[in-house]
Image (cartoon, rainbow, N blue to C red; front, side, top):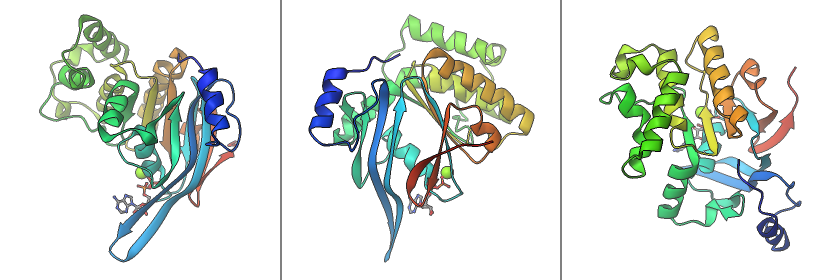
Length: 251
Ligand SMILES: Nc1ncnc2c1ncn2[C@@H]1O[C@H](COP(=O)(O)OP(=O)(O)O)[C@@H](O)[C@H]1O
Ligand SMILES: [Mg+2]
C-alpha cells in the first residue's frame, strides 16, 4: 500500500489547491473537476466541480444514471482524457499537471482498467492478453510473468491460457480482464460497469474476485455501476448527479 506523504500534502494544502485539508491516509484527491464536450454549436457540461477524496485501500462505488458522466470521470482519473479545469492528485503527484507522455507512463505503472465489454484483444490468447500491460512497460521480467501465472490461476483460467477470447464465456472473458488489470500490480483499479454485461450469478463471482484481488490486498478500486447490489460490495458509495459527486447510503 502507498504511504501518505505528510510533507507534500501539507504543501498542497498551503498552496491553496484544496478547500479542505486531506485526511491523513488520502491517496486520490479529485478537486473541482470540470469537463464539457462540444458537439458543433452545442456545449454539454458533464462534470461541474466534482470533488472527492479516496483513502488508501478504499473501494469506492460510483452510482449514477446513464449519461451522468461516470465513464467520463473514470477516463479523467485514469489519465486517458484531460480535465477542462480542476485537479487530480495521487499522493503528492498532480496528474492534471503532467505532460501527455508522463501521464501515459503514470497510467501504465499505477492503473488497471476493467470495462463492461471486457475489451480483450481478439487476436491474442488469454495469456498474451494477460501480459499485455507488462509488455507495454518493456520486456516482462520473471517476477511479472510469475504474477501473470498466479493471477490466471486465481481467476481459474490457467488451463485456458492458449485459448482465444471468442472461445470464452462473458464471465471467463471478464476474469481474464481482471487478471490483465492487475498483472502490473497497480495501486488503483478502475472498473466501468464490470458486471453490466453478465448475468447475476456470474456478476457476483466477478465481484467476489474483484473484491478479493483489490481491496483485500490494499489496492484502491473505483467501480462505476448501475446496480445497488454491486455497490454494496464497496466501502463507500458516491452518487454522480448534475456533474457533482455526493456521498449516499444504500440500503
Ligand atoms: N466523446 C464525446 N463527445 C461528445 N459527448 C460525449 C462524449 N463522451 C461522452 N459524451 C456525452 O457526455 C455525457 C456523459 O457520458 P458518459 O460519461 O459516457 O456517461 P455514463 O458513463 O454515466 O453513461 C453523455 O451525455 C454523453 O453523450
Ligand atoms: Mg458509461
